[in-house]
Amino acid sequence: MVGFITLVQLRPGSRGMGGEGHAGLYETLWENLTQGIQRLGGQVSTVFNVLGNEYDLLIIGQTEDPRTLHRIDALCKTLGYVARTHPAVEASEYAHLVRETNEIVHGIRSSKPDARRKEA
Image (cartoon, rainbow, N blue to C red):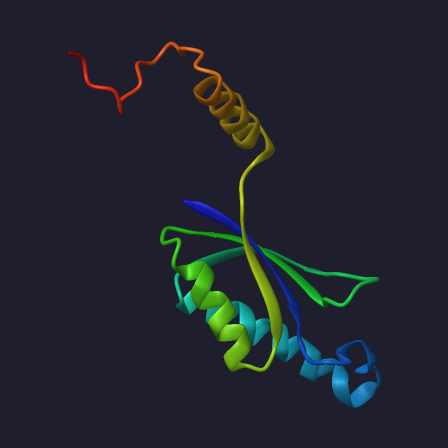
């Protein structure tokens, strides 16, 4: 599984969409986007409103297919939204990757033999 976060600006100037007539429209926008991501193969776990910057939404999810990350950005562009999708890794997994990378770069042998080397 590949974790991801997507930052979305629904519409340029969308933070000014207040008022009675726009409340339902805003909800429809992020619900439609979430459903679109799910149709593309993403599993959306959380949607946050992001305050104080140019993005309106932070979507957290995961997918089996890494190509889904590109499809999410294509979906957002098709809908007229500005979006950035990034792979996301749990902090503990990332710390493990950093240690592992350090060992490889500095030639420190880990407990597992390096599968890339062939025994002579």
